[in-house]
Length: 208
Image (cartoon, rainbow, N blue to C red; front, side):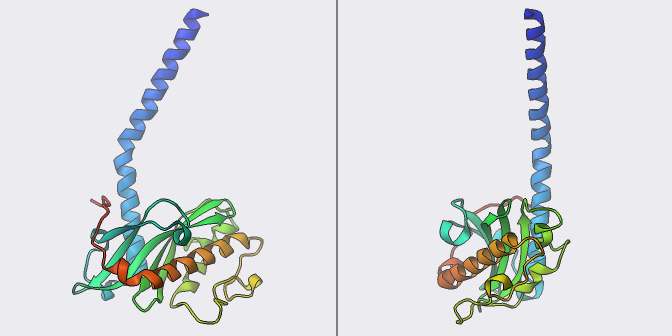
């Protein structure tokens, strides 16, 4: 029994070391792939013709749990033309998705108009809630060109709640959480625009 116990302990140690080694070996590659995907998304939602700076290099960290849905600081990327800020792409979280957090990135110009929205990560139900992915549905493009309006926020709700956004058949919780998160982020940017756009870069993202 002692011999078998020692063999099992040795086997467990070897497996742990192997897993740790694989994680260490793949960590840099995973981070590089994540950074490349972020760059691809940024190019989609912030038109190249409206800015002349490298968005990744002007990254700021924002900490506001009420507005951004998480207690963790989130990155935002400031777009500028000839040194003048023209837009921001900020990350936010919908904490009340059907299966947990939905991580979103939203590009907004200085007129508080939405340039584009994309889903960065989620755990929503395949075939239902995953329509928040552009590759599954064009639903996220329904935010394009929208801005805050003075009619009690009516457009910023799914149709089931009296708003203008389509809900998904059999899955209302996901789009409801998504719309709410986008609305909160835009409201936050509108209130804090001057402060946010004047901040110096203060976060680092490895995209090499």
